Image (cartoon, rainbow, N blue to C red; front, side, top):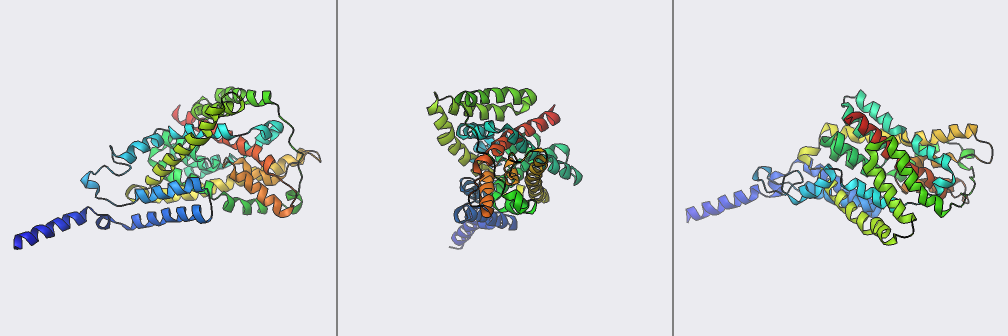
Length: 387
């Protein structure tokens, strides 16, 4: 009988070693709390729920503690596990171009074509990328890591993942989580900066309605845009190629089924996979480090710089523009490529000062230009450090 109880006790002890309770650390508790916060913000505040729900749940998945020495093949970093196979699309940069394909298929570039000078705002907002890059260098990150961190300022999660997978795969999880977090917090971060940098008169500037854009222009744009941008930065071909291809599917008028698939089921599936696996990559034993915390701080700095850069650039442009053609600086924030949330912020803030001044259509021009701008910036950084 004594041997029986000894056998049972040993079995219970061995079973307990395999449970999450036996392998729990403070880091796991912290990350589970972060995951719950993400889910809370997505459901109750509706901050980018399509991103934060998968990422938040992925954080929970990645931080269920287990006995790593047992080689159970369940963790995202364990070769042969299901999560590891799904994570392959992140670490090899497969998912981001597919996201760009869907973005291209759902994006209308008409407002940009009707007022091409607004493209400059998309370029101006990329100052956040290079500002964060220089700050990261100053605090000790190597150039490749600094470049990957800086791209967070573009507020473009897929581009951040694509560049990090090439230049700093060891920081991929922290960079991806930071990029998507700040994309979700656009309605919180940008308005105070926009209000701080503008006065009441500037916020009430009315812009001319966009001109009508012909179908020919819409069809030619993705072809000409592809040739111009990729001849400058061939390294950005996977992103820009898929973006413009998706847009051609939309605007050609003869591939509606393909366009609908790209902007519907395809982008939804890839969003689920990228969100879940990026969240799972925050496994506390490998993710929770001082570097990760530093990346979050740098991400915030780059996002602030990008927003301020766009608004200030409009104010400078207005010095040289005649009355009647001036640009409302509240759309300068939309130069970051968080489509369409940053454009919506321009609209919301503008309506606070003039209930009849609708800025959404104008803001969409720099917003979609920001998508192109961040991809071009990523291509420049990629060619510079991998050349």
